[in-house]
Image 1: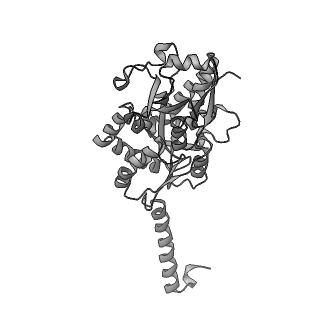
Image 2 (image 1 turned 90 degrees about the horizontal axis):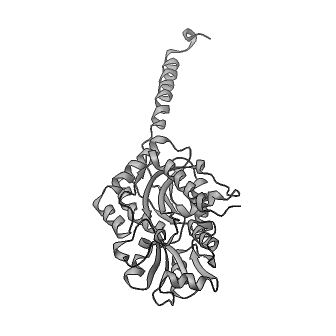
Image 3 (image 1 turned 45 degrees about the vertical axis):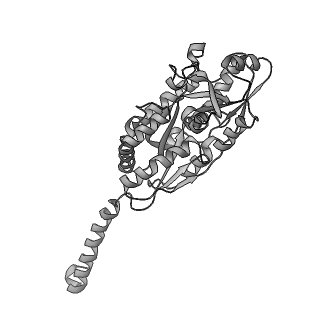
Length: 319
C-alpha cells in the first residue's frame, strides 16, 4: 500500500506518533539521576565504624545529590549479608553500600561466592590503623603482659568475623607462638561489651571506632598496628617496633553494583568528594585517628582495594 492511498489525517497522525516515539527514547535514556531516594546499606549493626561513616556522610550526600539516603543496617557474615542485599538489587545506582577491609579479606577464601568484579567502588572514605585493646580494669596492663599470658592459655579476642582482617592478626600471632582464639561478634556493641564484660580478653578494633570508650577510660590499647606511635597514646608501642610488621589498615569504602552506568557512579563519587573536602569531615577524620589523605575517588579505588588484598595475602596463613 502506498502513502497515496492513506487518508491524509491518518498519515499525519502516524507521522506525529512516530516522531513522539523517536523523541521519547533518548528522554528516557537521559533520565535525571538521582530522581528518587537511594538506599544506603550498612552491612554491620548500629554503633560501629561502618554505621558511623554512613551517618556522618549521609547528610552531605543528600545535599549534594538532592535526594534522601535512608540508612539500612543489615548485619551478618562479616558484612556479606548486607553486601548480598546490595548486589541483588538493580544496577541502576539506587542502592549503595559501605564496604570494609574485613569483608575484603574474605576474598582469600576460595569458597567466597562474590568477586571484586561484582561491584564498583565509588570512593574510599576513611583509612585507620587498628589495635588490640583491653578493658581499663584488665589485669593485662601491657603488651608484655599479653605475651606472657598468651603463652600460658588461649586468650579470647573479639573480632568482626572469621577470615576478617581482625582474624588475620589473631592467626599471625598464633604463628608467633601466642595462644589466641578469635571470637566473632558481627554487632559492634556486642564486640565492645565482650571485652568490657570480661567475656573476651582482647578486642581488635580501630581506635576511632571506640573513641568514646577510650575517652571515658573504659578501654585502652596495648599495641597499635601502625608505622609510628600516636601522640595521644605515646606510651603504647606499635607492632612494628616490637618486631611485628603486620599492618592492615582498616578502610571503609562506598560501593555500587557492577554494571551501573559510569555516569551515575561518577555522580556519587563526585558527591562523596564534596563531602570529603569539607572542614567538618576533615575534623572528623582527625577525631577518628584516621589518615588525613584517606579519600580515594572512584578512578583509583579499585586499584587501592587490590593493593590492600595483596597486603592481606602476605600475612594470611599458608595452606
